[in-house]
Image 1: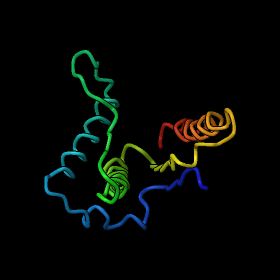
Image 2: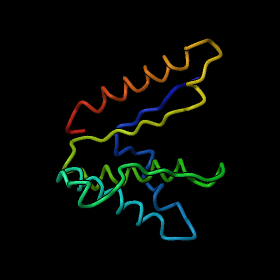
Image 3: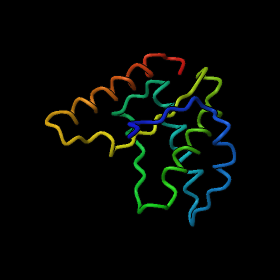
Length: 127
């Protein structure tokens, strides 16, 4: 079982995904603005005691409601919008089911290995 998938963004396979997603509310522009603003706050090192903001976006809902597609489309949009700030962008999709093992302490090792790999990706400040 594959633990994660990794894409360099913008990715051709995600072209048009944003436009194909239809929701009852205007969640797409709100989510895009929120993420973009969070990145700007982080870049400007805004004091979190002056402006409270969260750098985590949590998507939830039943299977088949578009969470994964929305995440991929959002990452694609942000990679394009922030291209002047970052020379490249990466998306890592974690398969949580692959991180569990029937062997004692093996799950912890798998999680540690995966996040070690993600930490390596984050070391490049231009990505």
